Amino acid sequence: MKKYSIGIDLGGTKILTALVIRETGEVVAHVKKKTKKEKGSHNIVRKMLASIDELLMSSGKALDEISSVGFGAAGQIDRKNGVIIAAPNLDCYDLNLKEILYEKFNIPVFAGNDVEIAATGEQKFGAGKGCNDFVCVFVGTGVGSSIVKNGKIIYGATGTAGEIGHIIVDLNGRQCACGAHGCLEAYASRSAIEKRIEGALKKGRKSCILDYLEPGKSITSSMIQKSIEREDELVVQCVTEASEYLSGGLASIINFINPELIILGGGLIEASDYFYQKTVKKAKAKSLPVPAEKIQFKKAALGDYSGVVGAAFLEDRGF
Ligand SMILES: [Zn+2]
Image (cartoon, rainbow, N blue to C red; front, top):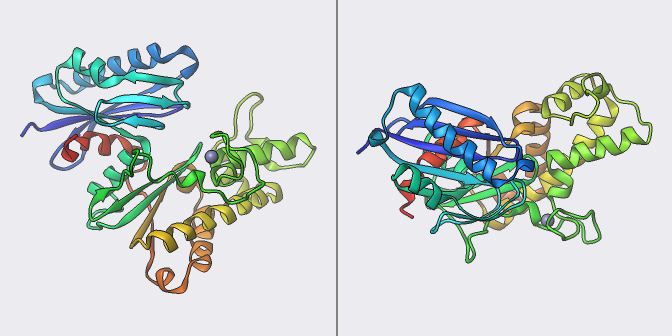
């Protein structure tokens, strides 16, 4: 067996590429580049290929030491053919990355979605190690999840199982990016919280988050946490509201799937223990008593690396 694999996490803000030791999951080297989707998918492909070159160069490894390249992106992925069918966050459509990567490097290529690679990373080396029955929920621009049952990821009939962000929590609710109304991610994602805060600021509400916010820049998870620490009324109100909805979504998972464990990850979960603790407590309170008693919660353990590590191990899945 070759010693290394390469994992790529294609995100809306950054492209993270890493060289991973297959035996231990250790990241030996990584390259981070800004996505800048407005420059088009050609630019994303160019950056991705350059990242692999840089990775090999900086680590001094040769291509014949690499077992495979795996990539994951937020959106609809044709795993078998390695095609990004639709990834609005990257502005990529019908992009055959497998072909492009194989043509350039001539090594096996494997594809997945963003939460699937993060769940795979956590399962192999993070918070899901030793557990065969869990759900990973990542809260960021959207709310995504991946379901692991008997140690394997559940894909569903069209490969889209786990879209917890689009369960309907309010029949006449806010418009979601998917076109429907009242989806969970329109209430519980970091972007939903940002929109609530920005809307209130425009209406003249006061908040200490303005101390951190530069003009033209967007609100980050760490700004939200700093404002919570200062007991800012507006931010605490918006985060509490999001936590209320997210806990409802998690309670639905607990009742519907009855997993042993839920792993929570994403920028806001990492930045804010307040948000995490509040959400976990409420999710248990909203679930049916029997599954609620058994359910465990953990924070994702690999941080920024869960996606790249998981992507590097997509080849174990076999397609
Ligand atoms: Zn939706």
